[in-house]
Image (cartoon, rainbow, N blue to C red):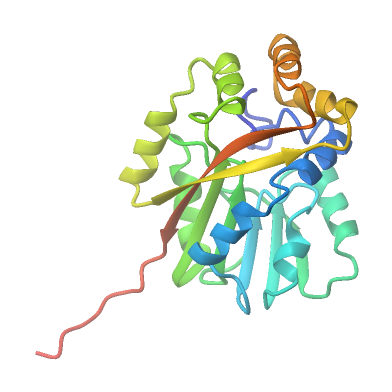
Length: 245
C-alpha cells in the first residue's frame, strides 16, 4: 500500500513497503489470499479470459502470470524503475506479457487498448485519485472494466491495525467516494498463511509502524489471519446509442 509518505519527484507516491523491501513483499504476496478468493470474485466481475489486460501498479509482476495464463495479452505498468526491471525478469518467458514504466495518471498506452484494468493496493485509495480514474477510462475499450482491489479497513484484525496507524483514514468516506464515482463494490474475506513466524513478523514489519507491528504479531498466535478486501468496479461507457426516429 502507499498511504504513508508524500509524492516523489516523478509525481508518483512512493510505496512504503515494496519499494524499500521487495524481498519481504514477495513473501507477503505468497502469503496473501491463499484460497484465491479475490481472483474468484474478479473472474465474475471483470473476466479477463481471452481479453487484453492492464495490471496497473504491477510492482515486481507477481500477478502478471495469473492473468497471462488465460488472457490474450497483458500489460504491466509500474512507476518504480527497479520494480519494472524485476517484473520484466519475471515474465521474460511470457511473450504475451509486456511491462512498461508509467503511472496511473499517465498510462503509456493508446486510447481503447485494453478490456480490463486491474489495480491492487496501488494508487486508488479514495479522494484524490480522480485523475487516475479518468486515465483508466481513456485506455479501456467501451464496456471494459476497471477493478480496484484494496484492503478493507472495516474487517479485523488487519483493518484494526490499519486504523491504528492511519487514524485519518475513514473507510466509510472512501467507500462513499467510489460510490459517487459510479463504482459497484463487493467485499471479500481472505486468509493469509505464512510459512513460519519469522515470515509473519517480517511482513507485519513493513506494513505497520514498529509499535503496531509488535502488537499485531502478539495478537496473531499462529501462522495465519483473516484479511478483508473491497473490490470496486466501474465499466467504461459503451458510447451513445442513437434512436431511429
